[in-house]
Image (cartoon, rainbow, N blue to C red):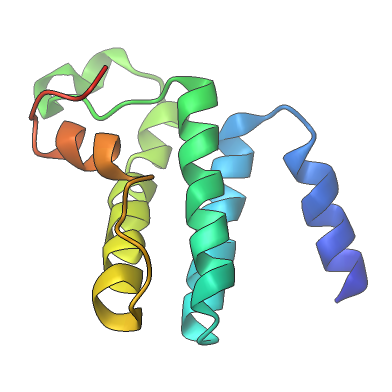
Length: 114
């Protein structure tokens, strides 16, 4: 387990925000299933930081053809981050999901605060 945590820490300093986003989403899911909501919330927040660093956004489906296959593989993880943040808030008494608010607004195609 120690080796796994060391590899994850090394990955998070690699600068590959897309891979880090994927890893953080999977780690958040694992901590939710392990009933460790505080740690899951930490990794959801990391997901949002990697999304912002890479400037990833939801796009209307009609524009999907102009994006690389690598980019489109990440799109299913966006709603997962939103879902887990809302789950932690509603079911586990966690904080309001401010970290994923911009993502959720993009998903609903509402104006963001930016």
